[in-house]
Amino acid sequence: MLIAEIQALAALKSQVLWAAFALAVAFGFIAQRTHFCTMGAISDVVNMGSWTRMRMWGMAVGVAAVGFYGMAWLGWIDGNKSIYTSGRIIWLSATAGGLLFGFGMVLASGCGSKTLVRIGAGSLKSLVVFFVMGFFAFATLRGVLAVWRVNTVDVVAFEISAGGALPDWVAAGLGLNAGVAGLLIALLVGGALIVWALAERDFRSGNNLLAGLGLGAVIAAMWWVSGHLGFVAEHPETLEAVYLASNTRRMESLTFAAPMAYMLDWLIFYSDSSKLLTFGVVTVAGVVVGAFVQSLLEGSFRWEGFRSTQDTALHLVGAACMGVGGVTALGCTVGQGLSGLSTLSLTSVIAVAGIGLGAVIGLRFQLWLLERE
Image 1 (tube, one colour):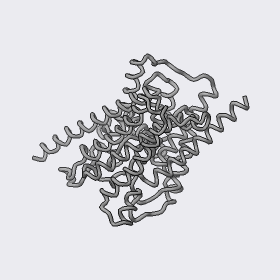
Image 2 (cartoon, helix red, strand yellow; image 1 turned 60 degrees about the vertical axis):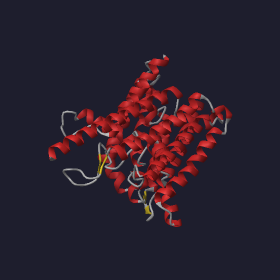
Image 3 (cartoon, helix red, strand yellow; image 1 turned 180 degrees about the vertical axis):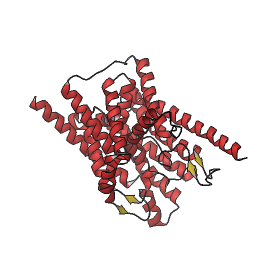
């Protein structure tokens, strides 16, 4: 009986991994087709005053938030079982990590997700960024930088007994059911973001809508795969609740800082039977595959290398900053951005604000370099 249950669990885990991979392929395909890029969106606002790509991002967050709390209201997922909704608000880690990540993504020509998309489209320098970012992410997760992180910025935090997300506070304050409060707040906040995005007539085009609706739906679907399909109320061996293929042991959606480290770990120690495929590893691969397929279809696949020594140095420094910052902040522009903000988490808001400010500083630094030359 136990053997049969374990075999069934293995089959279910395989389904979870394939579903996550397929959704990551869709993410990479859409991001490549629509030129979705958080760094690009911030650059457009700062340098040109254009909010079009930022509206893509806002709509994606809105759609993902409505999807997340809609599923929580239906009882398909437990909205409190993610790393983002913890009542312990690591504000200093989120701020410092966000600033470092935002600055780094400008130097490295894009965030973690954009790096994977660019690899799929033929960028060899993005491949270098991937390896460097993954190395520093791993060092910040479990290596020498992890000791520094845990003993410094992670110590500074405060607790919110009701929980770390806005719907938790509303439910506690008004005495509402958590599911109802979550859905109402998500409809208000997420709906406002969607309306804001659609308010600009020029935004209402095929690719813009595909990015906002499509990527938001992918984030929500990832929550369902990890939090519903991959949830086992009682593991046959441990008799405890478990989220299959999860690196965090909680339900997950897309994020790319720590998963790059997990990917390197899996590749390097592949022969070690304890190194198994996880949600994060397959999604990293899926984004590259999706972007590769789309770049071939649109004829945009091009090999790309570094232009100069300075270009190389800037990308290496940017990759290191993203690896350290992404892990410190508990996520990147997709992890704390799309996935984290879909939970309406306070920590995610702080991290995203830090990323945005770091990106603006990075853009000003790049302008200074150009003027200096």
